[in-house]
Structures are given as structure tokens and as C-alpha cells.
View (tube, rainbow, N blue to C red):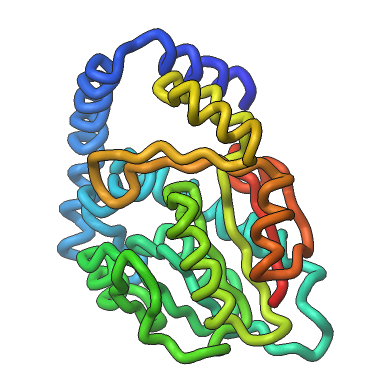
Amino acid sequence: MESAQTLLTLYRRTLSIESRKRVGYLRESIIRLLDLPLDLLDGVVGGDRQLPPPRLRSQIGGSSSRRNFLQTGKRAAAEILRAIEGHVRPGERSTRWLDFGCGSGRVARHLLRAVEIDMTGIDVDRPAIDWCARHLRGSYVAIGKEPPTPLPEASFDVAFSVSVFTHFDELLQRSWLAELRRLVRPGGLLVASTHSETLSYDRPDLSKAEYESLQSHGFAFRGGAGPFNSGIAFHTREYLRREWSRYFTPVELIPAGLLGRLDLSVWRV
């Protein structure tokens, strides 16, 4: 894993952004060609094993690869379940789950198979929400980029977010933490992934001021001109303990606890 991360860092620092875009376009074209037979079969067979179309898959992980979509989602689901294991109090209900930023169900589909839960997914991406509503068990709701949501107060036992707070500026982060605090019942849990400060060194495009903000304040955000998830945020673990504790009680912080790369933190209302 470390060698792969080293190669990725070298790749990002060696090639220009335009060169990386051309390489990415070529790679994606090959992936879509190789996955085409199974994608066509999905449209004929259908069923709960059907995957979202390439366009929706690529919006989540940067690649439309069917294999990556399935493997990453399955691993993330297992790591989220492992993170809350032991933190659900005896006798407490823990079946009402909220997937904040569900996309096209990359993680939700595996959680629904692993445990008996009532799933609600919310996302700003309406085509992804529409796909989930047609193909996955649960309720899926399109929301705006800013809270509030139309969901009732204290209606979830567990809320989780994968690669969502990694794309929020500080103001939007605070707004959504407050909304999630409203949505999770007293005693319920929030599980969220964030970029640690160490991952900032993979981003040669960050400015000196952004690096300094990360060092002094514990948070840095680089905006993007592309889609809704093109901005990128980094949090130090000290920042999480200091700032997020205004909304939740910290339970556990798992360094690189999600996909071997993202920090995973558990919080209680």
C-alpha cells in the first residue's frame, strides 16, 4: 500500500495537470471498453446486482471501473461496521441509518446486504439518487448543497459519510455538522471520513497559504471549478477534536481507518 501511495505521489508531482487529464481520459476509455459487455448485460438482466451506469460510477471514485466500484464499496462498508462495533450501547436501537452523500449507493448496497437496517440516502446528485431509488432498498432523497434537509429531527440511529467532508469548506462543514446533529437521535452515532494533514503532500497545487492554514489552524480547503466534489479539504486530528466536539462527543478516531487512506472518526450525539 505504501509503495502504491509513493508512486501516486510521484505521478502527481511529476506530470502537469493537463498531462494527468490526458492520461486519465485514456485510462477511462480503456476501462469503459473492457466493462462494456457487463454494462450491457446489466441493462438486460437487471436485479439488485445491477450496477449504476459508468457516468454515475465515475462521479464517486474518479473511475467508472466496475471492479473498483464493488471492491471499494465493500471494503468501506466493512470498515464502517467495524468502526461502530462496540460503540452501540446494549439495548439501543441501531437500525435506522443515514448515508449522507450516498451517491449511487457504492457503500449502501453492501451495508444493506451485511446487516438488517432501514437505509435512507441523501445527496445533491439527483441522477444518482434516482438510480438508488429504482435499484436499492430504502429511501433516497435529493437535497440542496446547503441544509436543512426535509428529514425529521432525531430520525436516525447511525449516520455515516464517505468522502463528503473531504470536499467542504469550513462554513459548509459547520452547517452540515449542525444538520446531522439535528437528524441523529440522542445517543446515536456519526461516522465520517476526512483527509488527514499528511495527505496534503500529495497535492502540489496547494498554495503556501493553504499549507500554512493547515499548520496553524488545522484546516485547509482548496476550491475547485469543476463538479460539486471538486474542492478538497484537509483536517488535522487536533482540529477534529477541537471543532467537531462543538456538535458531537468524540468516541474514536481511527487514523487511515477507511480504505487505508482516509481518517475515520466516530462521534456520539
